Image (cartoon, one colour):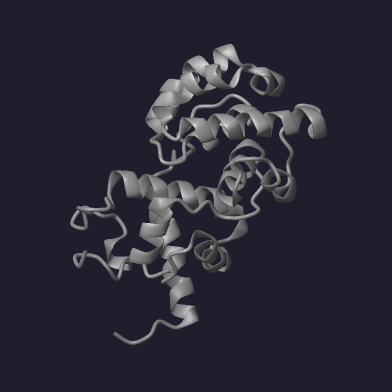
Length: 217
């Protein structure tokens, strides 16, 4: 296979974006939230856990804890019990309490709108910050790279990297900035519905003709 030129890759990416947009016009964040704090908490809980499970947990959690101070003041054992089924609950509970305490002390209980301020909070890495900025505030600072995005970006030949931040840096120049948040949703939806980790449905894939891995996985 000849090496793909930058121009050819750019043209292919445009077709991939168009194909995914057409296939998933309703793509959105599948974590349930009604405000930035709820999305922040839900995203912290989503580490190593399905969105479906997180949504079951937060349906009750957000009734009990309604603001950052509620989470900061919650007894640790009580919070741990409330989120136990999401896995790694001790670490998540500790991070949520510390994160919310910092929100109260430094940000008036509000979720900040910059990568730097979000990244400084306990339990908030670049991926979580990107989720919150893109979906709660419609601010495109970067591209969310989760396991689905990592898998599909490699299968589609958009990167050979395996590190999330390196993948993000390679994807950002390929995708128009105003589509960064949507691009993640499109890949995540495609990863969940079509391009499975073990048995991708290449035969039914809407963008198979644009994928160098089609029929080879």
